[in-house]
Length: 200
Image (tube, rainbow, N blue to C red; front, top):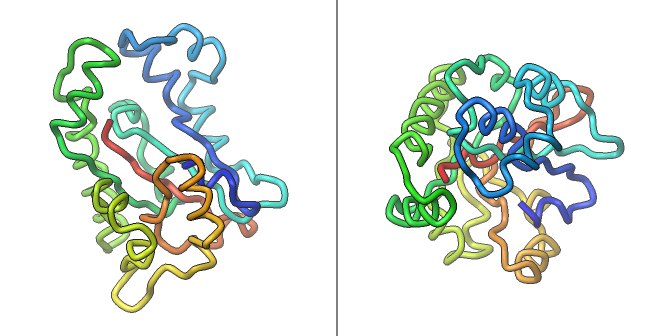
């Protein structure tokens, strides 16, 4: 995500539904009160912003979501306006990471059930299988993994994942967003990318 944030043509939004999730579930995450105070926690207002905001001077609006933040009451129809990719992790790593943050873990806290539900939802609505990338493959493969299949005939170009992005990845030690499909020009030229829909 940080690599996308370093791109001059991209606007990055990190977990915009986090405050709503914390408020509704009462999950004891560190800093929960501060997150709820500092972010919009009405999911409808968040979704309106995510689908209508046009970052000035940008052509890519990169949104990183955690699947368990999309609680059942959140309408899914707004996802139609985004281009999706799914990042997965080894389940044991997910559980270990969550326990460090919250102390205990339930299946729904991992995001896996929600990720599967949203994957099928996106596939059913688009008629296409969205990209699914294992985070370990992405980290190990480097630039070679940037050219994943976007569909049967089209691959991601270097204008989406450039050498400068790779340098940013190295500088920050953060995985690049190379799993994204080619950005689609919609909403007055803004490509809205739903990255991740990631399980924790």
